[in-house]
Amino acid sequence: MKNFIKEPVADLVARLEPMTQDEVFAMSDLEAMSEGAEGTEREEALSQIALIEEEIEKRFPGQLLAPYREWKRSEALP
Image 1 (tube, helix red, strand yellow):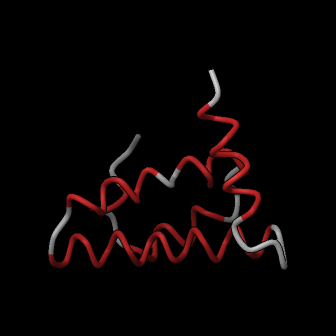
Image 2: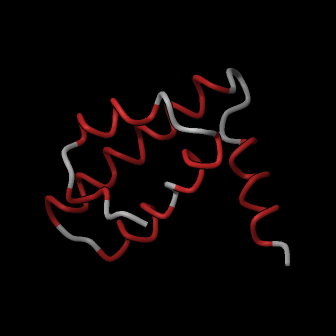
């Protein structure tokens, strides 16, 4: 996966809309990357995670992150 933490947050905003559902959900790898990050890098990752959460909410109004959690469960199954 491309390291989105090192890219400007504004670039992510422009890329989210045309992404498929799986592409948006797969960007959750930022969570793991943010856990090892510190300072500005961590802040950037958290900003990007917030944008992804907003995009999921926009695509699935009123469902919070339920579609993402379901996708994550299905990805974990062998």
